Amino acid sequence: MTQTRRSFLKQAGLAGTVAVSGVTAPALVATAQNAGKAGGDAMPRGLTFVTVKRGGESSLGVRTERGVLDVKRAEAALKLKAPTTIDDVLQGRGSADALARLVARAQNGKGSDGLFLAEGAFEYGPCVTSPEKIVCIGLNYRKHAAETGNPVPKTPILFNKYNNALTGHRGVVKVSQEPAEKFDYEIELVIVLGKTARNVSEADALSYVFGYCTGNDLSARDLQSRTSQWMLGKTFDGSGPVGPYLVSADQVPDPNALTLELKVNGEVRQSSNTADMVFDCKALIAYISRHMTLRPGDIIFTGTPEGVISGYPKDKQVWLKPGDKIAASIEKLGTQEITLA
Image 1 (tube, rainbow, N blue to C red):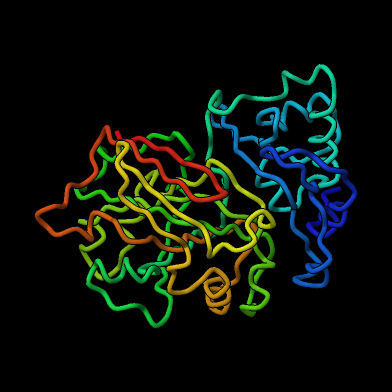
Image 2 (cartoon, rainbow, N blue to C red; image 1 turned 135 degrees about the horizontal axis):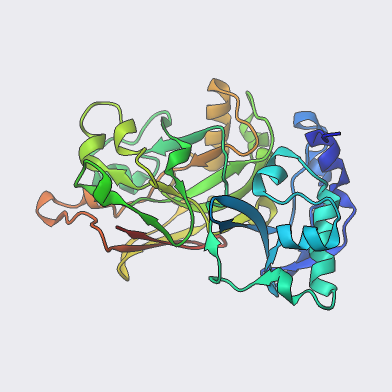
């Protein structure tokens, strides 16, 4: 029988501890402060997730001191009924307790070396693979609004991407196939929802967050400015890389106090802090949830700071081109690298 999300999450407090990213932390602990909110759902704690890609198939990885645990292989060996994709985790399929026990047993067990992958020794998929919605926020940093000659918005500016935009760390984005020339970067903090959210308050908003990751809202400015609607310049294939890691929310106590940095071919182009957001993370979740139902696995690109190419004087705008390498780093969330082709 398929478990409900609630029954899945009720099992989350039964594990011991596992070492994650060099830190010993509770694994998938159900937090008391989340009990009773949004149907009693609770969030995983202390885990950093990775998507391992093999051909057209994506499976779950968990980052540990021994490397990235290949959860699918570990589950095949240990048979604990653990979820084996990030979508399974987000949607409550499988046993949360089993996942915690699987990670702990693999880390402590002898003969389990074959279950761990070295960082960079595998193909990374997007750290969230099947969001129902990808909601993006425009002009959400004060200095970015200023550099583009726009007023600071009085309400959040929403636009969208689609799942075709998703790609992972070390992915290749084929901009040469697109009918555009003015390609730009935008480093962004990405929020991943963990519970159904509708009409939530700002005070409660962060309790609905599953985790956070590094994003890059790649943009074709010539397509974006073709009409008053931005969608066309924001939705080309690979225009929304996310990852490499999806970090559980408890490891990011204040998402609006994180440094961001983006480099193109080794040159720093963006350097800022999420404190410069016009509308912070809790305000965005509350606002969006007043207009649509946010569901587990939905993601929110929260906007980009200053330093984008479109903010340069026109005589200094040198657009991205095939061969460029972009590295986007956010404090606590890791560095994402992509190459344009």
